[in-house]
Length: 250
Image (cartoon, rainbow, N blue to C red):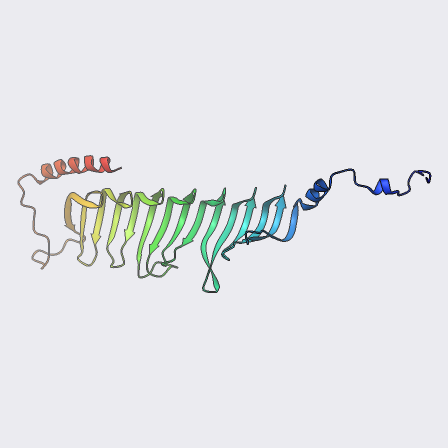
């Protein structure tokens, strides 16, 4: 048997002392930038890693060919990023903005399949906070559609907000559960009139009509004078009753 001279390579010194599974596992650990990594599920990722998790800048292409480009933290979409949908051979943006814990959180813009858009605040994947929603019309500026600017809660209009209709009419007031709920003013722009009142669950309960701009006496279509003996008392009682119904709907 040859002598064991220090510093020389022998079969025993070359033999790994760790199990093969441990050596393979160490080689498989992903840290820092990597080329594309493929999964048996059909997904693939190219980007940065930390502790064997997607962490930093990177792009995932999902099994259905949709993709996410942006920031990651601990294997979740977290930071700024864009979700793209693959439709008819091309990519279209679904959501662009802030993410936290794999869901839209913070400020971002959403593009729906029917052309509707929303730009504003998000919380756990839902519209929540102040935002601007366009229903129909041109997505860039809402031309030709209805435009809502105000507050949302759990994905529905809630709180103060203004809805500008495509026909020119405008509602400014309170909302709850995606419906007019509380005090507000509706401007009938084509008629030159306004209604100040109270809504409950989307329905008018009480209020007063008036001219947006007072017309000269005898103008065709002008509102007639109020002929109730005590209109203020009638309105006050109706307002109290409507307010109770509004509170019940919240």
